[in-house]
Structures are given as structure tokens and as C-alpha cells.
Amino acid sequence: METTSDLNDSLHAQAKSGAARLHIPLTRFMEQALRRQLKAAAVSPPSSKPIVLPVFRLGLKPACHCISLNRFYDQLEAETQHDSAPRQHSDPCS
Image (cartoon, rainbow, N blue to C red; front, top):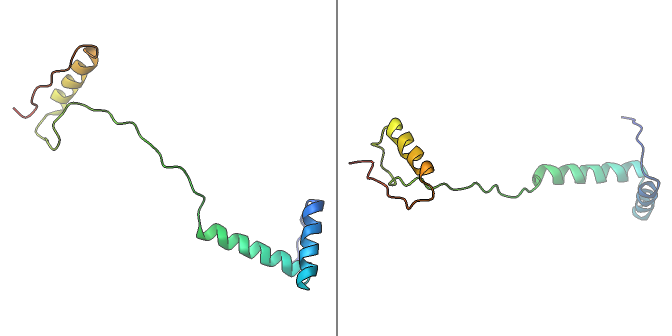
């Protein structure tokens, strides 16, 4: 397939020089470079930093599933209203 693309003059000169050193046509040199780049992009996706999420302590006992949502919201609301006072949590399962 024949296509036209715009290349930076310096990049074109480097590619032409590289093709001459390898004794291959510029087209083949460009194809090999493009294949190498596509293969590298397919193998290793761009790395990203892990997402750190905040942790909120609600004062509930772990693995306690016997609290109703209404009671849970009441307790949560009481905690936010008395944020400056020392927290005393009642046992939600009792």
C-alpha cells in the first residue's frame, strides 16, 4: 500500500541513514520500525500509578451484618454530629 506522511526533517535523515547502514530500502526500514513499535505497544500497556482510595472508619464491628440500614445511618449521623467529642460506639449487634 502506498501512503504519504509528513516526517520531521531530522527524523527522516536519521531513518534514511539507518536504512543505508543496514543496506535496506527506506520503506523496509520504516516498516520494521513501525512493526517493532506496534508490537511493544501491544505487549506492555502504558503503566499507570495505582489509585489510592481513602479509608473511612465507621466504628462498626467487622463482619457484623445484623444492623439495619436505618440504624446504620443514625449511627453515622451521630458520629458526624459529634465529630469533636470522643466517640463511643454502641454494639450494633446487641
